[in-house]
Image 1: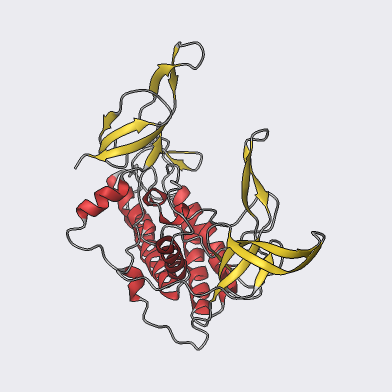
Image 2 (image 1 turned 180 degrees about the vertical axis):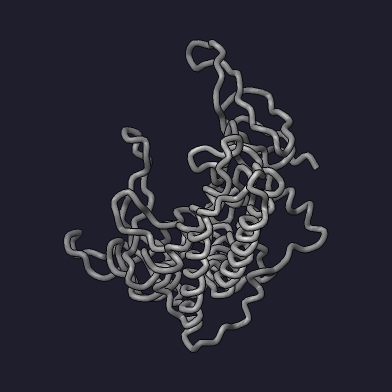
Length: 368
């Protein structure tokens, strides 16, 4: 997956509405029920492959994966049943819908371990057609950013699930080396983000209610510049996140630490935007808006949406077009979808000697 663009602003009303709607979608009963149903279809297809593909078939599936596949289905069933009653503890660490994401991810990583296509848990080449057919059934249980509600343990090296809205909204967040997940279709009219509540917690404090929370900076009034009094102002400090009751409010990404080549983890305040009380009465409302189909004639819009997508040298080109190497004074190149993104030969800073560099490529123009 390429680098995520930062061209999204949490001060923008449209961005806020899309992030809010998307987090509600990713935590809906309907989405997780569809994930469960798709996994059930994959489980049956995989079992049939194990039973019917000849032992001499070089593409034969590993029967040792079957217990884990059906254990994941059982966890899906338990988790979705609880979610349908408004019980969101299922996303906490060690609970059904948290564990199932690890187990299903492990199956995906070890689906086909033939050395021509796989190394150390990573797919290295497009699968043979029969294997890819099974892989597509597995991927039908995946949605972009579907880790959104899972608990983030409050440990020093971890931060909130989403630091910037681009991680949820950028099309390249849904593209991977050998596949891509469907980009969500947003309704034509998105509702306003609700007015924020007065409920504010700090990183490390227990989350009192399930819902969508906004990281904020809190400025307080002082007497003679010494004694903090009441809250003076509260301002957005990053991307909305979905937090589950009884987890701890996470830290967020801070400034880049040059010495350690990483971003600092810093505490923040979290303000409740919306309490999630869905399904507590056992009623599942109409959630069909979360699964809208792309409009006909939207191809041009789709092409425009991918301009600016970024990938690295060695990645598979996700779309045919003209690509530029960021940070290097070299001519743009034409790359066809499915080809491996190249490196560049450019003068080394200071010496002028030409060297080969791995680079980040940015799409300038779609070929179509």
